[in-house]
Length: 401
Ligand SMILES: Cc1cc2nc3c(=O)[nH]c(=O)nc-3n(C[C@H](O)[C@H](O)[C@H](O)COP(=O)(O)OP(=O)(O)OC[C@H]3O[C@@H](n4cnc5c(N)ncnc54)[C@H](O)[C@@H]3O)c2cc1C
Image 1 (cartoon, rainbow, N blue to C red):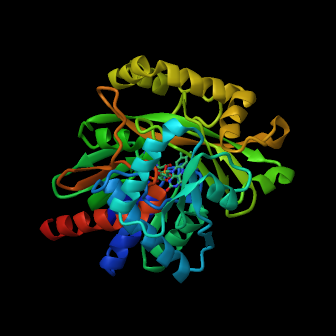
Image 2: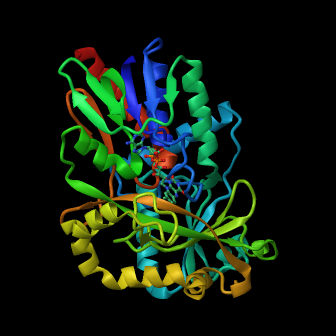
């Protein structure tokens, strides 16, 4: 099998990249290689389903730029292909006076990132938007919304196939060899040869880059996010999206309440170390992957610096009461009987060797390969923009090969 371009990973980032390449180069021979029997079964399916506005991210960062651009591209794509979404809006609430400076900082970032219509709100206005929330102050973000990213991914796959691209499932890449004039990618005894290859392997992004012979400056450490669901009688307590003020050092910590596009209200996710990269349950353990994470200097440094936070997250993982307590900060009326455990997801979080979370997207390049090595939240929102960016690099490389 010989292709011009192969993309490893059939999640939303790989599919968006494939879609942007095949749209820009009609007639190109392209294949997406996915290890699972179906596309989009990992992060793309197991997320909060929020269309992020871009309010949180450092102005000028790849996250900020791609989120704002990707937001518009995503909405256009959904309108064109009749994919349901709901711009229900979100409030970010400070429950205590001491959180107000951080809240104001987020608001300023939102303005710098060009968001229109966001505004600071007082307790009274917060109650008008979300009558059951507790807030001393908040930010109203009208453009935030909800969607099912798996539906987006499936549509992308359909369009890629219509344009002659191939989606090859059940193909777990286990070796990558640069043969000077091509890249040979194998799965057991099957081989695919292409002029250019692109890695979009999510939780295995660093592994894939290592297979290709580069050493990424970080490792992916998997953090499981556990969700609860509100019972139907409690759904009246939440209208849209209710978020706490994030911890600036750990923006992914802090459970939120989320309306789902398919109906119902979810609470979560928390963030605990997963004992395997695709470890969706407490007892999912992969000895090799766990040892790899625990032996990694970056993880050990993170754990030493922030063991207290890690313990709190562990407690929240095992104790429904502790989880509920975090939710009651947002909506005090929620009761123990109102929530029950539902699904989980695992975040691919890159950690550098000094124990710092790699916040921004990371794209590494070799002569014949491009690696999307870190694409954490809001990469689902940003996927079409990331895909366009990577397609641009691919186009330049193809010219020179
Ligand atoms: C709990 C949680 C909540 C989130 N909430 C949001 C949100 O509300 N909004 C938002 O914008 N973002 C959110 N995100 C982030 C978002 O889901 C991810 O950033 C995005 O889905 C990343 O897409 P991806 O294609 O890179 O990864 P994935 O969807 O994980 O896809 C990677 C694919 O690569 C495949 N693969 C891996 N290794 C190989 C191999 N060796 N051979 C072949 N295939 C391979 C995998 O099977 C997988 O299908 C959330 C993430 C999580 C986990």
